[in-house]
Length: 289
Image (tube, rainbow, N blue to C red; front, side):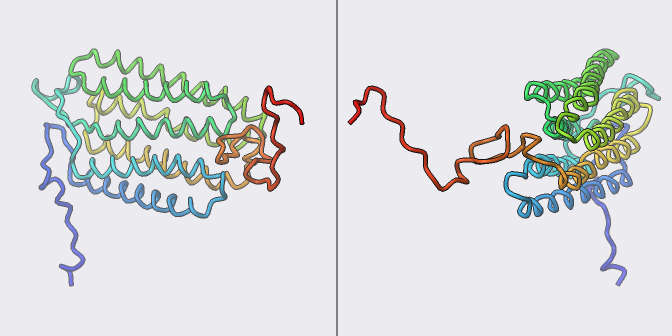
């Protein structure tokens, strides 16, 4: 009977880790748990998309994408795939010390961070220009950290500084600008709660990166325990918070009344909802009968 219930994580035997600082079996176990959280959340979101009201599925679609990409990324990391070995510059016990860097984590962030910024932007009612600006800032942040992680010299901290500046601009935009716009559409309290939660978590990412892929102060396993907790709180938890709070939002007032004609500015009468047809307009140059 014990054999039936025995489960062994042999991912690191099938896919041996690389580098002196590498993922441990316990770290892989935790990452499989995070993968399960992402997959269950993705399946739940995909299912409830079918029961959401027509025209009010935008947040379901956004977070379904983020959860699917997160599931794939954490599957790759838990299986000890999608990594490169980089020479360590700081906090190395011997001169030729190397560290395992998982690029799959950055793929996760380059999708999930923009999804969060789009969701906050749509909720607050800011302009499309502001939403695009915030998406670009999130990409600059993540890509700068990715380049920094792959830089074997201390020049990595220059990229880290650029990425952190992008994060600061993004935080200011989502907190200050977003809250001001949210007051006009009557969702200031919910937006403040969600943007405050997101930015509290975002505040910890530069710290986690500086201790792990940047400064090599903590090993790969504690680093991905840290990142895993942050990612689970940022995407699965925030996605369900959005859907729960969305039940009391007026999508028409938020300008989120999507129809087959696209996003409309005011909810109300749409051509597909009317049964009468407008009289045909006379052709230019046509003579009256």
